[in-house]
Length: 297
Image 1 (cartoon, rainbow, N blue to C red):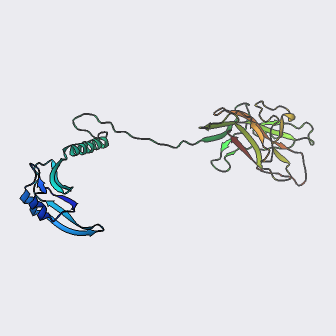
Image 2 (spheres, one colour):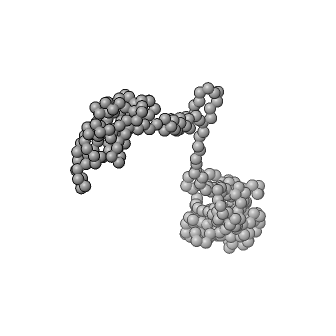
């Protein structure tokens, strides 16, 4: 069974008068006039313009056709039953529902075929990355081993036994003092720096710097040294080829000049100078720390 509710306002008499006078009638194929009369309900209300009549109709009989809705329109003093086809609206709604269902499921399941092609969206956040690794040198035959510490410190290098007269061989190479007892003995080794950087938009001015972040204790009769030309990859041979490394973070030594390339290993030289001092001096095992900084710019 189908049911429709119809409401309109008349300034004419009661529903019974309208039916008897023929003002409210049906079109061919509409609901019977008798049945329509059984379903009419009358309600009186008042407005600013005076009393008006409200006509309510509830048709509880099956419409003439399943694809139409029957309704009453009361206007201009006359009322009549009309039919409005809903067939096109239902077809459009059904088509939209079908299209939505196919769009949602066709990619993951299908009938009447032997293939299906679901899609997967992949996302990731790309970050810039930098790396600076130190390793044992390869330039000279004798060198001290660079060992990864796995923490703090990141790497270690030991020169072994050293003295101000260059009697001990140490682990690498030694430059004897020009004047024993007056000038310093120098123990040195090569090492390798390997910078790597990725996803950087600016890198042509990339540099590597180094400074002694934790120096040997006072009175500093042993100190850290590097090549006099800090960016040199030539092995030192005489005392003048080595100089004390900076101990100030604000003015570090540049060991990799602007333009350091990613993935290109750099051979450099580092050592310790031992002063021929006496008195309240350091002896035994001593340590210092050098901090290297890769700046991609």
